[in-house]
Image (cartoon, rainbow, N blue to C red; front, side, top):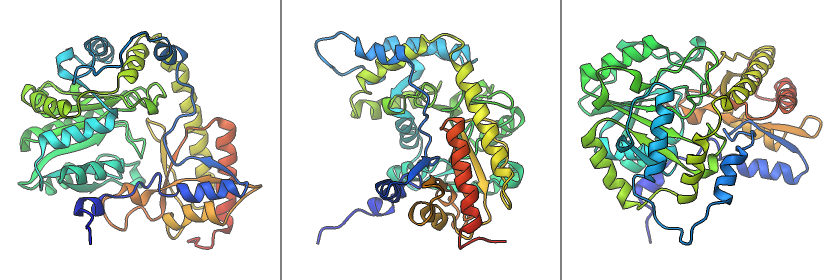
Length: 398
């Protein structure tokens, strides 16, 4: 009998997408489903970005350079300069989404059996990339009670072993929305220098900070060889389907190694590079309205959640996610029940159970992630559904 690989068996299912069949069944029954389960923005992709692809004029859709089009990388240099990051075009490798940038980092910096420390809860696909690369994720728990702040330095250092090669952060954070402070970034800097580690910084949500300013890992001094930035156009320009990201480091040996992985997949997507290049030409105030809209959504969803009996939701400093603790027995059961057995005025809400964002078994059973990617009216209606559900769910915990 043919066998599935151990890697294939160990590859985790997406906690964001695993409930999709239940949502589809609910829709077939005629139930309106409000999707707060996934970070797919409803804000329109800028017209000039789409027009750049529509009006592109070439005879052959050919491979680009494996590092991405030079014209795009040069434009990115200007973008990064505008946010205080000093790099040149040779220090940027364009990737197929931020996902490939993360995978390249794991593949180029870690060997099979090595360990990477990640504050949990964390972006669930880090687990999948780790399985692909044959490395082990070592979670270090942050807590909802203090808004998911960076765990104490002593706790992080206690997780470091001879197999530890890197620390991964997402700043602002998915799924918590936490924005790391300058002091916390300095603490991470001291750890990676002391223990000779890489710092992978996923900065997909850089523009969306509501309480303070994002400190990039490349703003830190004296750690250029240790730092890798993973970036993407997906959230910044509401272009998730474009699948264009960037792997950025000043470590030349690492760039050389990563380029070999980039060459093995030939090139990043050509049309999407055109879109990414056009996005950089958007006016400087493009993010003002978008950021203001997300902030109003955040304020509404946090207010509504904290007004519900037994619910606690810390105020996220960035991104467009909120984590909430609910008075329920099991988040996975609850999220499925919302889609299978519940409706309020023929509507329901789809959430992401937080268990899939934790690496430590048993954690997150009373927590859910909500993506505030719907307009204010729909957020209000989705919160009406959730509030009604928490009054009748059979697994309520008092």
